[in-house]
Amino acid sequence: MRSAWAALALIATQALATATLAQTQPTMPPAVGMTEKPCPTQTQGFNYAHPYVRQYDWAWLCRYAEADKQLAQAPRVVFIGDSITEGWVGLAPSLFVSGAVGRGISGQTSPQILLRFYQDVVRLRPKVVHIMIGTNDIAGNTGPSSPEMYANHVAAMVDLARANGIAVVLGSVLPAAKFPWNARLNPAPQVIALNTWLRDFAKARGAVYADYHKALANPQGGINPDLAPDGIHPNAKGYAIMEPIARAAIAEAEKLGSAAPVRR
Image (cartoon, rainbow, N blue to C red):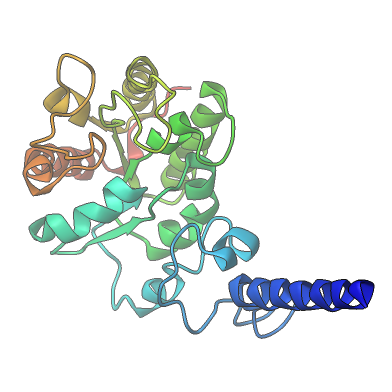
């Protein structure tokens, strides 16, 4: 009798586990494999950690796919990046008018941005692209990487933009003394190293470097809580400091255009 009850208990446990797994598994696209409509029709509650995104759309190409199609005309400037770019749209709406659109996705790293760069930037045919990425590379959000890998990804984005007549602004990595989600790391020196490379690379490739780091950094290499409560993501006051830097960089990029000399 005891073995029978044990067997029933095991069956019940397995059934419960299967049901729970079914509830947490992402819904498959309407067709398996290549299809004209690969994106889910219902994405309410999705974020970069959603099981569907993790399993089927690593770069989250579906995030802006429909919004890209609905643009009535080519934007003047596209801002592409991670959560810092994504949050900028809501906290500084005056910047995202007159043909400026945001294409930031929380949690993303440079290889993810590169993978969706053609869709979310090149095909929109903007005059300028503002690229700001690197925080999550240093934090290891998509696993270990190297400065060389980061540089290759950024260089590929710049080359894609320039080859398609798009002027480039490279935004600095924002200051970070620590990461709330990965407190073991000491990111401040790596942020400075990446920004040194970005500044030199921008000069060599005829791009414009927007130095937000200099305007926001405190003596510890982070951002004060009055500008970024978590030390990473600016609030409205932090973005207000960044906005004139962005505007000036975009204006300079528009003057330079995409025909500036490329020095490799």
